[in-house]
Amino acid sequence: FLLFYPTLLVERFQYTSSEIGNLSGYLSIWFLLGSLAVTYWLSNKFKPQELMFIPMVISGIFVIVTSTFHHWYYFLISFPFAAMGSSINWVSCMALISNLASQKDQGKIFGVQQSLQSVALFIAPLVSGFISIGHEVLPLLVGGILMIIASFWYYISFWKRRAVLMNE
Image (cartoon, rainbow, N blue to C red; front, side, top):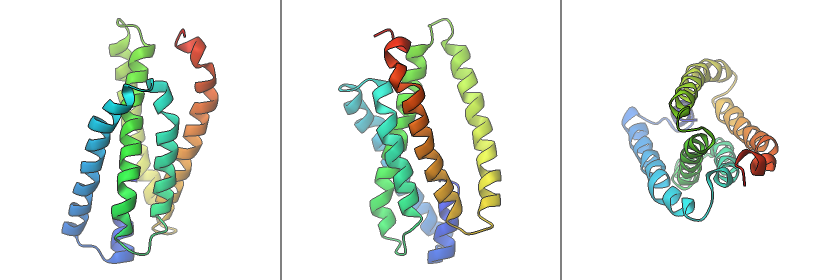
């Protein structure tokens, strides 16, 4: 999403690099607010495994909805939801990984997680670049759909077995 929404802005709204920079700053502020304030508040009420599903679905939906906008100012409404959902999910994912690993294995587990993230960050632009040949919204649509699929995969494979995995 973060890599290819500028393509949509240039194609659909003839955005300049400074306008994309301003909108990226706006998105970053909401990501930061979600990472710090909202996640902190939610973490006092919910466990990390409970905070993974809904924010990922919300982010996926708003990434898909963003691809349908025909006026730039709708991004100002959509970005906070997509950014905060992603940031809540990211922080919850790190906490969940930390909770599942023993203290002895946490370094290894986080290393593997960072390696997988690096591979994903390498593959995403390759795939998205190829997909965007068809239309500028396709990377956003595919990304949003994959986020929703991943959230339901998480729900089915982890959430239902949470008592066993978390020793609850």
